[in-house]
Image (cartoon, rainbow, N blue to C red; front, side, top):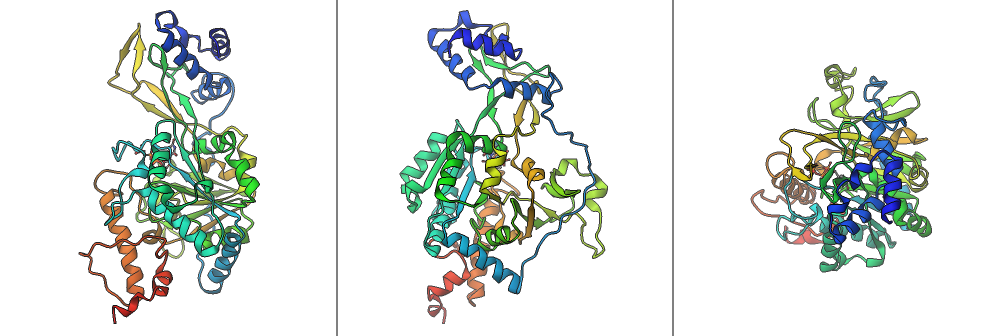
Amino acid sequence: MNYAQAEKMLKSCGQEHVLAYWKKLSKKEQAALLEQIATIEPKSVRQCRAALGVGVENGCRKESENQDGKAPKVAELKGAALKKAIAAGEKELKAGRVAALLVAGGQGSRLGYDGPKGCYSIGPITGAPLFYFHARKILARSIRYGAAIPFYVMTSEANNEATVKCFEENEYFGLNPDDVFFFTQGMWPGMTKDGKIILDQPGHVFMSPDGHGGLLAALKKSGALADMKKRGIKSVFFFQVDNPLVEIADPAFIGYHVQEKSEYSLKLCAKRDPYEKVGMPMQFGKSYRMVEYTEMTDEQCNRKAKNGKLYFLYGSPAIHVFDRAFLDREASKAMPLHLAFKKIPTVVNGKVVKPDAPNGYKFEKFIFDILPNAKRAAFLAFEQKNEFSPVKNAEGSDSPATCKADMQAKWARWFAELGVTVPTTLPLEIDPVYAIDAADLKSLGLWLAAD
Ligand code: UTP
């Protein structure tokens, strides 16, 4: 892109001020700015402005619309139904029709770790990183079912290089590199209240990652969706980087999703308290929508069902299975934008000013906003202690300490199923390739030692 093209594009969406300091920039800075401008799409700028109420297009969901939905029907698989679902899932896994999709482009600001969150050390004994547990689980399942589970990893511009390096240095944790596909999510420019792109330096636009919903556009742009199609993938298991307890490509979940002919399936767990900060899927007519905890009224949080339990009992920890064709269909559509009002460094009269109060908006897309578009959706209950313990904060709840304790407690329960009590003071860690569940552990014949 040259200057004239940049100027024309910026004018087309009311942003010509981005070139205000052009003449004061060095040649190198000019080239870098043009490169950055080339990544900004006028239609995205218009969508951001619309979300702020500036401009014409309406890209923003009305938060208060249709607030009182119904609680969805959530399956609790047991006995024969569970066996059937597992068999259906195993069939998909054996046929190589299942992929794993990880969103790892977040900034991890609450944890305060300087690097991709996936490289954060979590193994209670080995100190292995979060990526290790994810990759080894995928490897374990692909060994068990004799078919590759291609692994698609979304990174951001800020952490892509370090993520790829972490995989390379660890020899892909045993996975075949041909089955690991890295792709980078998009960035959106920050804007003032009146819809003007913010410069954080005279020759630099402030940009931030476009949220985990940026996944769809990135899957398409990178060729990952085409790669899935070429490989004959039907079901895509989606998960987040910060939860090492997740049961990736869990056959029961895959099987239930396929049995239900669902396009978007969600694993849900019972809230620990009425105000737990998790999104709740609600039914509105024939479709579903995720209602964020911030959108729920007091009455909705506390409403009781006839059985005395919370009516809106189940929350979503972002463990999903998507139909690949559904992702394909959704990838070309514009998604709603969510706004965050933040302190953003800004250039004023050629000088960079660090504001004391929020002064501009960041824009994000959320993957669950495609839920209403699913022709069929399915909801499956699971027990939180077995599959969800995220590393969000440096200390306190949802921290490395609670996560490590939860990982060890889960492994200790596997031992307990085999009649062996592991003292809580004893550090415990199991490589997923060694055993991915209690049955695996049993088949290793360890029990002899305990006799
Ligand atoms: P979080 O919402 O927990 O955000 O992401 P975060 O960036 O990891 O952490 P904080 O809020 O800055 O402390 C949930 C999941 O979505 C991914 C994250 O990597 C994580 O797996 N994510 C989030 C992206 O891939 N891209 C984004 O732009 C945002």
